[in-house]
Structures are given as C-alpha cells and as structure tokens.
Amino acid sequence: QLQLQESGPGLVKPSETLSLTCTVSGGSISRSSYYWGWVRQPPGKGLEYIASINYSGSTYYNPSLKSRVTISVDTSKKQFSLKLSSVTATDTAVYYCARGSPYDLWGRGTLVTVSS
Amino acid sequence: EIVLTQSPGTLSLSPGERATLSCRASQSVSTSLAWYHQKPGQAPRLLIYGASSRATGIPDTFSGSGSGTDFTLTISRLEPEDFAVYYCQQYDSSPLTFGGGTKVEIK
Image (cartoon, rainbow over all chains, first blue to last red; front, side, top):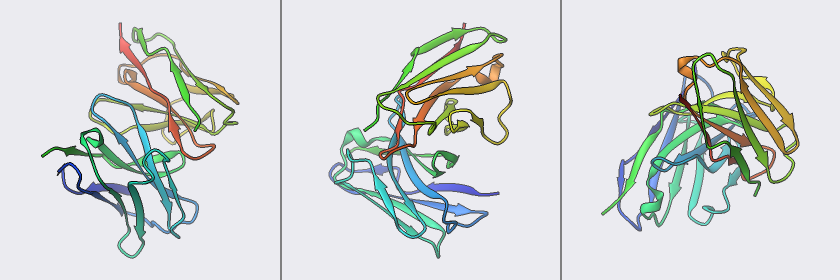
C-alpha cells in the first residue's frame, strides 16, 4: 500500500534554508488526479497548509509563506520536496507530507527545530 | 483566504455519549469540506470529505453534514479511541485552510 515518508534535518539554524523530502513508496506519484502537499504544525498548535504540487509541476502556495517556499517534484525518484528559506524560530514545527485534496494519506511527520 | 471557525474549543464528554462539532466558513465552500482527527503524536487522519462522505475505513458512528458555510461533524457514540482533536479543512479554494480544532476530551 502507498506510504509517505518525510526526511531531512531535524535542526536548522536561523536565516538558513529548511529542506525536506517526501518519498512515496508502494505506488505511483504520477497519477494525474492527485496533488501532493506539505502541512506543518507548530508544537501544541493547529495545522497550517504550506504548498501543493502535482506530477506535472503545477503548484499552489500559501500566500503567507509563498515568498520563502519552493515545492518541487521528481517523478523518477518518486519524491517531492519542500524548501523554506530564511527560517526563524516560528518555523519550528512538525512538517507533514500528504496526498490529495483533501489529504487522504499522510506521512508520520518530522519535527524541524530552528535554533542556533 | 477562507477562515474556518470551529466550536466549541473543547468538548468534555463520556464514552457512549454523542458529540456534535461545528465548523463555520467565512464564505461559501460548497461541500468542499473535510474533517480529520488527530491523536497525540500521530498524523491527522481523514474522516469525512465532501462534507458528508466517510473516508475508507471510517465507522458509521461518524457523520458529516452541511453545505455553504455551516458544517457539523457528529459522533453518534463516543468510543475511547475517539477522544482526540478534530479539525475541519476547506479545499474549495486556494489556499487550503484548516480550522483551529476542537478537542474532545474524556469528562
């Protein structure tokens, strides 16, 4: 069955770029009806949508983060990625990758802490 | 951006009781409304999509209703595993947005 797995550094310094990858296993990333997205959750808080992409590279971004976010897809590796630049402590969160709209499949999440 | 307001913030109930959760949108989202629950340390899980359709594997104790701006999630009989935080999400327009959540706790 299809599974998603986030990977990337758990600690990022302020002003640097956070980079995460989501690997899709057990199925295809190229099904045209699906979007693949990133959602984050600061400790003890609610969910925040970051960005979405489909297999052909069509993208959507949260306007509040758009100036700092890049989402990309590599269908050959069955991966999609997130880059968030100029991070501050407020970007500390659990970052989830997910499939669809709405999100019917989620990764387990990865905690990224922004600290020097 | 569409703002989703969930109420109440916390619902204190006993196992076996009925839970009614509300989600109100700042503008119409038609029926493009989903519900999730999230247990501590876990990713959210999709419960309801299209305002009223149950996701795969979700028991019929969960039901959703509403359209436009007012939506309701009902849990007809709370099981111990249902005590969690519940979020609504609209996917009618970008950016996708989530409500602030309702915590269903054991009374």
